[in-house]
Image 1: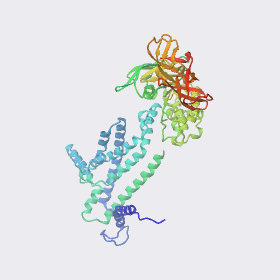
Image 2 (image 1 turned 120 degrees about the horizontal axis):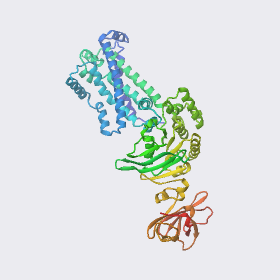
Image 3 (image 1 turned 135 degrees about the vertical axis):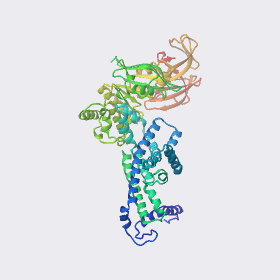
Image 4 (image 1 turned 60 degrees about the horizontal axis):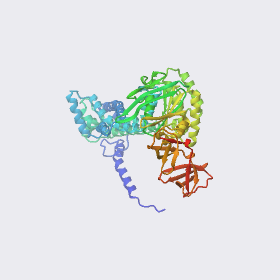
Length: 257
Length: 342
C-alpha cells in the first residue's frame, strides 16, 4: 500500500524533539570534559566525581531530599485526611475546588502569602518554614488525586467493615487506605518531585543558611552554566524518572488487587 | 417458632420533608424468612438500615428478645447485612473476606481459621479460598458475601435485594441455596426486595410497603388470594382492577353488569374490583362485552388481552388450545368467590 504523507505525525515528531532536546542537552553536556559547558571537549565522568566533594552542593542536595521526604509524608497524611473528610461530608463543588486551590494559585502569590504569614507570627525562616510551605502546596495535589479515587469506592464497603464488627480505625487502615493505595502512591510521587525542584516558594520562605538545591543552582548560574549544574540537572532528572517509573509499577500492582 | 425475635414498634423516620417510615409496627419470629416488599422509595431499605444500625429512627423502638436493639452499637449488634452490591473487600482474598468478621472477635487465630473453613465448606467455596473477589463470577461473589455475613453467626441476617444482580438460572440456584443455608444455620432472614417473585419464592411472610407504610403483612399465598387493599391487589401478581359501583348485593359494572358478592362497603360507592387473569373464562358471543385485542402464546397458556366497552383492559390466561382470535367478541365469566372488592 502506498504510504500517505501524514502531517500530524511529522508535527508530533517535531514537538517531541522540541520537548526533549533541552533535556538531552543537559544530560549530554554533563559528560563534557570542558569546564565551559558550551564547548564539547570529549567524554568524561570527571564532573560526576568532583561534585561529591563540593560541600555546598552536597549539603544542599541532602537538605532538598530531607525537605521533599518530610513534605511528602505530611502532605499524604493531611491530604488523605482532607479527602476522606470531604467525601464523608458529601462536600459540594465549592469546598472541593477550595481545597485544591493552592495547586492552581500562582506560586508567586502563594510564596508572598506564606512569607507574610510567617512574619506576622514572627516565625524565623528556616527549613521548617520551607517544609510548611511545600506541605501547603503539595497537600493540594494529594487532595486532587485522592479525591478523584475516593469517589469511586463503593461506600457500602466501609459499612460492611463496620457491620462485621471492625472499629473505625481498623476500617480506615484495613479497608479504606488499601483501596486508596494507587492514588496515595501517585500523590507521594507528585509531592516528592514537586518539592524537590521547587524554587519560587523555597526562595521566599527559606532562611539564608540553609539553601536548597534549586537555590544553589540558581546562585551558580549567575556565573554561567557549568558542567556541574548539568550533572545536578541529570541527577534530579534520574531521581524524578525513577520515582515516576516506580510509582507506575507499584500503581499497577495496587490497581490489580 | 411463634416467639417474636424482633419487635418493631411505632417506628418513624423522616429525611428532611420526606417521610421514609411512618409509624411502622412489625413482629418477626425466630427462624422466619421475612420479606419487606415494595416499590423503590417505599421505606423498606430505611427499615433495613435502621435494623443494621446505619440509620437511627426519629421515634419508635426496635426490640430483639425484649431488649433495645437500637442501644447496641452497629459493630456489636447480633445482626449482619448482605449488601446488594456484595461490598466484598477487593484487596483481600476470599478467606480473608469471610474471616474478617471473626477477626473482630476475641477468638484465637486457630479458632478463626477453623470456623472460616467450616463455613467455606458448607457454602461450597473450597476451590476459591485464595482468589480475589474480581476473579469470581457474580453467583460465586454472592456466596462469598453470604458466607462473610453469616460467619459471625448473627441472630438476624439482612439481605438487600439478594437476587437482583443474578441472571435467571443462577437466581433459581441461589433461591434453593438461601433456603438451605437459612435452615442449616438457623438464622432469621429479613429480605428487602422490590421484586415480588423474589419475595414470594423466598419468604414465609411478606410485609408490603408503600410510601412509608405497611399495607399488609401475611403469607405469600394470602397476599395473592386475599389482598386487603387496592395497593396490594395491584402490586402482587397480575390482576385486573376494574372500577365499579357497589350495590346492596354486590357491584354494578357498566360493561359486565351486576355481580352478586357479599361485601361491607355499603351501596352506591365507587369501588375497585380485583379479578385474577386465571379466574376468568371466556365465551365467544357476537354481542359479547369485550373484544380480544391481543393474544400471545406463552408456552403453557395463551395471554389474552380484552378491551371492554368501558375501554378498560382485562388480561386473561386461556388454554393454549383455545380457539380465540384477535377481533373476536367474548363474554367474561368468573365465580363470585374469586372476586375481591375494595
